[in-house]
Length: 342
Image (cartoon, rainbow, N blue to C red; front, top):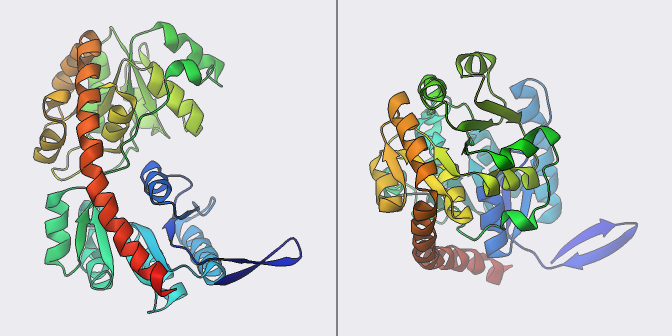
């Protein structure tokens, strides 16, 4: 049992697992934690230089975990610093599950640490990844690996979400637009995306997040919208009103968060033509090479075929939910072994 002090009095609670993410919010972390009924702790470390943020997060993680005393910890990867902070806080008697995003293996900033991550997650610990290709890499480096996609569920309809918080976005409800939720990362073909906005002037392109100035300047200003970072509810409104989503990548083994979100929202989807994405979405999405003319043509086609593609991806969602249940059960069993010992 764990004893915590709240409002001047002691309260006793049963030890539980926790999901730790060094980011203000991540849909995958939140969804997996919620589906498993475990705690979630997320923190982006505030502002300032990266080393300072990591120092803050190391201290905050250590303080939180030592107070919470979890039975197991799931920790988002990268950065490897988060995994090291968790291990430092909980010692060797608490098992750790690393949620290995594609960047663990391919991001130039973090791929150097992939073998270290895998060694730290060797038995009795665990790694979870989004596809078989990444599972093979994790196992080859010494970790036990489980394939688990982002939580696939059904998002609310536009009618239940209310009006946009930003009045500048209200006009989108009357327009045809494709939502492009990107992070402007190493695996996103930014030059091709910017060029695509000039090749498909008949639709709006809505890019979320903090877009670099050079990318904004390269896009067609007449048909692009940059709402910046938005609240979760505002993002769900953008998603609900969109005619289609674009989830681009240049990496072969990447599962795009935006692709999962298109499935959850039952939206027409355009994504990159890779083996893992073709295998997962099949005919329910338009998969094209990450080239400007192909993105523009596919975006236009997705908007035109919106109803047909929404029906296809909604049908696929039902099948994927059933498949995902088995993986969640396996992860739940791994977690409950630790809870039984606590």
